[in-house]
Length: 342
Image (cartoon, rainbow, N blue to C red):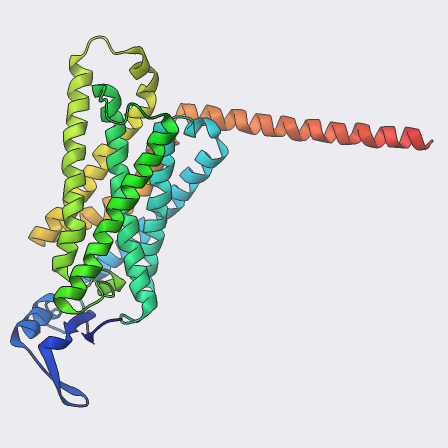
């Protein structure tokens, strides 16, 4: 699917218009492409020719934190699945959707980072596209969760004519459509401008840094900015309003969770953007730890509280009671059958 060649190390893709073959195993490459190849990949090597400690530390941190996050997200999703009361409200449903899509994104991230797919294969293209899509949709669900808190406290009328279920469907459509648009833009622009498929770069991800900036960094910046503005508004409203409406008071326990989540996710992606534009390693480590551990933060924010503990206790008691009742009914039925036989 890729029109061109891939140079190693680093899976550096070269458009067919910027090189030509001298011999079967030798090419003549444009000087600009060669300079970009050197600056982007060979600079990662130290004077002895081995990979830097930064790459090794980043890989280990990413593996450990991503594994912890995936386990935490899975636990959170299971708890929300077995406790219907947690997903009765729109915030609860939004939370479950965010957990689901982030779980998929982090599983795909591990596969892309530690798999061994060929960069020019269809499997690598599909994996890169799915990775891009699910990270985008996770970001927009963070935005939706923050908007829900903002909507309640600011009494925004947007979508107010819709019922809870219709509003929830509308949120899904928004996240799916916007994420799909950015994926389609990457494929279309990459094909038109460079003849490449748009995916299959480092770890099968987006091929060029320019398209990463346009189709991922840009929407990420939008989410961070809008989350920060809405979060700030909600905090100011809580601090300055002496009497809160009754329906707001009823939802405040759920909204506090979303506000905590908004703060965590905002800080996480800010460090990622800082590293993208400054290349300062400390921002890279902070981004890896905070971003890869998002599932851990979400689990502590959403399910490690007294409300969920009490619901789990009630669920466990009810289940044991049901089992005991079923056992008693079976015993009584067997006894009746025996008596009838006699």
